[in-house]
Length: 487
Ligand code: BLG
Image (cartoon, rainbow, N blue to C red):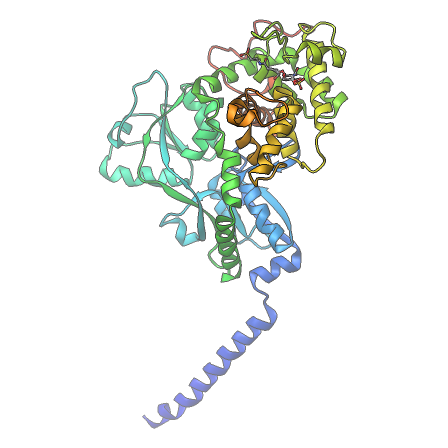
């Protein structure tokens, strides 16, 4: 029909013009998400408060997700602002709100239903969903064993989705989803027998197992999955592209691996027995000495939790131990060290702690100024155990091997050589049990991390004695068997 054909070209032209104008106005007026972030100078991120994601420690904000996302903010040259959400629905709900967070970094895995709400980045950590049960109960071995059990998972979690999927096969399967709990609460509930089972990702299990001595992994439910960051579905590609190239970069340059080592690499150093014993001693022994560690830490300007970690490694917080070699007391001072630090009675825990703290601080002060933190702390710990002479020998061996004598990762490879004749015969100070300081430092770092977590400001009390750490056989409503003087 003529009238219609006559209209068509005009309509098409109008449409093209409108589309062009629309695109143009989009380009000119509306900055991309990335441009907006750079203009604001702030990257807003939503996460969860948990040991595996984000928490406050002695130096402020920390956690695996925090550090990874801080690297992105630094690359963009903007400030990082973290917001924590109480549950996963709120994590996803926070994305895309005006002036709200543009990115969720919260140990998330992708799923079909989540992909309708958000877009996921390249992966950065592989985890397996694990079924968790309580030691002493019968161990479930496959999905059919979940039927008839009291199960709780985080509301809105990928684990809840997994259970919903399983229900198609096992219609009798039941579970509860809670938005009032975090992963640590689920583990505690299994530990205390309030629920039979939960589902938690392997990285969080590994990191938290020490706090919950009764929890055990029953089996992995399904295949390993990748954790990814999420951005709101409505955003343009600019931010996601930037995130993906950042993740690719940190994978290539080793920064991601270093972060994994730091947070998850030494989780196993204590072994299961060591970890549970430490958890018990935190409740039963540390309260007696906490004030002494704090006082000496203040005097020497070091972190009290580091001193406490040294004390645990040395004596498991026992005041009257003596080693085969005659080294004595809570901080295991040699006679020479005790004399030099003005300690008259090594078996007096107060004096021992004060002397150990002073010795540690003086070693650290005297180290080569080319050694920077945090390596400086690890070097000082090693010297506390093996002496500065032997440590310097190991640093020279490192240098001769083309390694960096100021990096703990390099020098710790050399220390064990001090017990091999082939090597120690060429050093100034000769033989030393060089493997000992390597374990010494690794253990102290792990104790220190645990102490940092249980004394963080977010927990109700900042003191271990008041923390809500659960330990079997310890009734928290009663004072410890051997209460600290004056309490
Ligand atoms: C440390 C001293 C260092 C000393 C080294 O030995 O003791 N540290 C303290 O006294 C705090 O001063 O260095 S040196 O002065 O430069 O020679 C080396 O002699 C103590 C170590 C020894 C170790 N614990 C603190 O870490 C120990 O007791 N080893 C014996 C273990 S066992 O019982 O024989 O198995």
